[in-house]
Image (cartoon, rainbow, N blue to C red; front, side, top):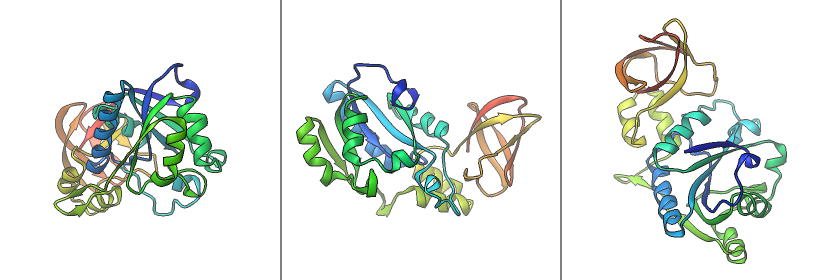
Length: 244
């Protein structure tokens, strides 16, 4: 997986199938969409691409009160790569981007810069100024520009809806085991350990309830002790990937 910050960092002459979204937590519902993305990319002889945002749109629009995110951009990219995505493009969600119409974004960025030949959207996904871009409004644009368009319906787990909001609630209650089941993977925390302590500076990063958890630290199993925004672990002075 290759991580790009902005469209200007992309190579030329790409041929891609694209999906757009926050993908916070990369849970089982997201992975259903990613499977369709990879399948369409394979059929069209293209690369699979996820376009995501930094900061999260709610933060950018000043609606971040109480906001808790399951994944940073780097954590998200790690998981997306793990599930077979070829490229992740991080778009700066600023006022200029917010005011861009969905059709302008599709034409000027997805088609012109990514060489998009296919697009996969979630059942309720909207983007662009006024949230005007959705499966229905994309249909005429897809026909005009000649890219394939597919929609993925909502994923459920034993009849229960799966969403980032559901996972956040489980994590806040300390039900890490159920959250892991819903996500389909462990909860990821990336950071730098100094003196046996990782201090999570990102105020929006959701951490499990304080306590001792079994985890993988750079692939090695050990215990971690979460104390508010601090994580105590038995490693020293290195970058770590914690998977609880």
